[in-house]
Length: 474
Image (cartoon, rainbow, N blue to C red; front, top):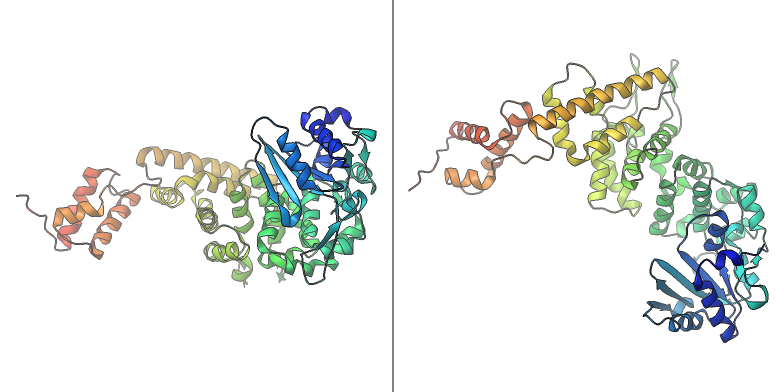
């Protein structure tokens, strides 16, 4: 196969080829860009490998541009990177690697193109396109990556046990590529995942979570999670999710398998949102069910309080998995804590007070909370699903009506602490917070409207009951 016509679409390839010829270097386009070019997937990252100095090649290519081209050199790794608008070009000399069992750091030596390709993770990433004059554009495919693309297979170029033992992160990459491309993992390759799963212990949490997030961001992440579970890779870094799997039965009463339910909720969310953190809320919404599972002879299995305990578990899981401990964690925690609240509002006699409290607690995340709640309906009974969806339509309509009338989403009580102190001539103290809390409760209960006049009248009443008198103005 010759891909010259595809290379001709971008002048950078001819430029690199001309510089390489001048330097007397064999140079090739390698790796993911070749794969994506053949699959028709967009890619802005191009890797060039030459038999010689990749750094020198990058420097000479950069010098051919009239305008300044940002160049980063990493001498310890023998690589260099150029940034051309939204393109990233990486240059490296062909190399071979060997590993020590206890370390992820390879011993690197100069190598041939074949040695460079065989050290790569999968056959679909072990292809190259020549930029040399004698065969410009020719696909070089020593491990039949093209055939594995047609067969939709993830397969290692060498014996998979060696490939994964050398760099255990490749096991997660196998799952990630399978999930992104909707490929299968070749049988021997998959067997090697479980055989080497414990090797993940030498991989940093940051690298693991980067691959996991890429699985979560696929169009149907349940496929990737099922591969992680079946290979026992998931057991190595996410035991809380693994514990959801399984069904207990007592007296012919069973509960659903919460692992596969969670994956279905995740897939449901993905149908209408690409937001990573809403997807994480789906993953963690039932995470505390194993810890709260109880059997009641009258009603069967219960999971009372799993939403509250799940919210308490969320920071610890985020911290251990090296996820951000900022507003993104708090957002996920909030949705986990509130995910059962809208279900309780489907009754016709639901009060405006309950609706106001949900709006106040959810704030700007109320729409995402409702998306999660809709995704949480996973019954195989279509009539039951439709009934729940119709009920949520009613809840959303009621929420909209209450919000328009009372404006309680993210509301701040109309009376500030400063105004209370100034009105009654008092210093900062607990009584100020008590007055503000009573005003907030009165608004949420609907006893007063959310406006300064009614709030001040209530403030005066509460203050008098507490023995406070307004300051006379001189």
